[in-house]
Length: 144
Length: 144
Image 1 (tube, rainbow over the protein chains, first blue to last red):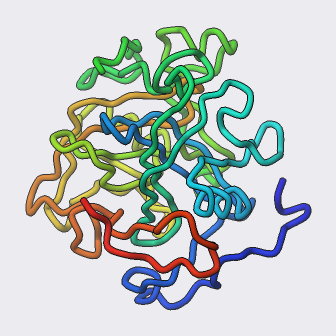
Image 2 (spheres, each protein chain N blue to C red):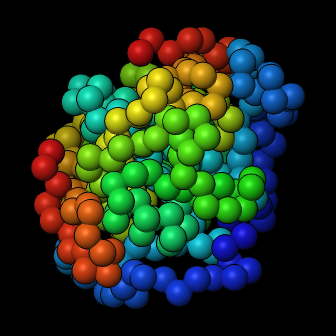
């Protein structure tokens, strides 16, 4: 985990709540494992493509290069999305939230346009019907 | 935290990778704190409104009622979004991802249509310009 050998963060220290919520300084909050959640949506169509985690290095590389980098919790290392598959994420916009503890990337998937390791365009290819008892829920194909 | 007094989960135990990725059984993965990340997008416009966490109870209530429920990590309790503000999330679709360790809600914000506690429609109201050294990044208003 990043906590074993934390690199020096290139980001600002956290300020007051007012600074964090309304300031222009980027003061991202990383969790106890040194990670921040990253939501990736399709820059053209708008749907959620994937969800992953970034450490400070991955976030800095994403901001500086405009290419999606993450931290693989299973492989415990930096992960340039698409490095093997060719499905690189070309980021057009990067937002953070009120608390600066999440980032949202609008991106185009290069290569064959597939974001999910299963071969699906989006990782979110199954939906849950709503309104019934959760114990009997069965997943169905998502509509989009 | 939920781990202090874990309620019996109404959800199925995790199966094989094939079951998780391709089956119709809903087998959500909660983290060590008993939580799963939840992305909320605007059902009409498609942008990300907020990001929060659910425990098993919040997820079950969301599925069964179609109203967004979460777990407040700061208050350490169930949080029905909009219970005080009136800005309830009416969920129209709920998806899970390949690993079943994230959920995505498409929702309409009732009341005054504001999802963020700061009064912004979306929590993601600031963007980071891309391509420069991260040490000099200044947040700017998001375009959407």
